[in-house]
Length: 298
Image (cartoon, rainbow, N blue to C red; front, side):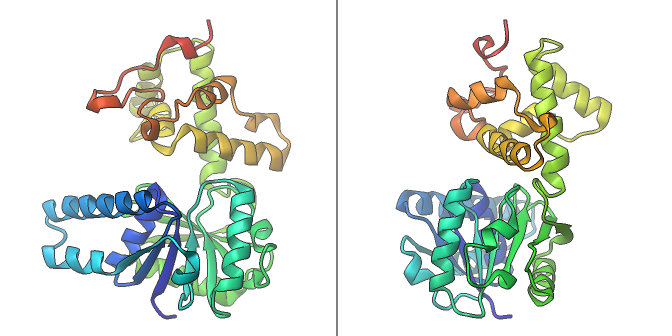
């Protein structure tokens, strides 16, 4: 397979995926409808490369080559004509993803593989929006993408062995560890992780313990590198809510129903790191602080 990659979405996951492919020598077209998002993404990638340089794992010349491998676009039509692989990394919203896949199916070359970074939505359902379901696959990267080794490779009902093998080997070429996963809501990572996060939020909601106390128990008692509430902030509380809703709808099992506190926090705009406040306060470079008691059950 050639090395022309298109990444759709310049948010946290999109810029991380673009960074990873570009640093591995791939030519990347990074697409977003908002120019500001693209500018922010390039700044983020540059800053992340500087951190790698500071650790002695990259040279200035390699940084320059990585950035030169990325071209930004706001028009999808101009980005995809020569694509060998398109990775969609847009918001975790089914309708949006179906619309994007219908568009890229029309615009992309016949031999192009269409991948989605969805963390929970059915690959089979996404593939049904295209005329090439055998070439649609899931590539669920972990955040932060340049650092985390795991990639869940998810086969849809019609995904061909050739497509799977190509993406599996390509993931290895990125320095990742690909794991084969079948197409069920939440796949493996989030099917296990999100109920834990949801239960941690429910534990807070019920007043069993505070934010820092819950996270400390899981870090020191269960050897987790990050507590579940801090991790939820890092992932994005809106993303956690979206994933839980997908699993709840997919399994019709009340154990996946989002806890009311999570729903209320997202409605209030408290989405975690991305909004400046979630279970901790990240505003104005302040140290993490517990979320206001107004969001907790009286």
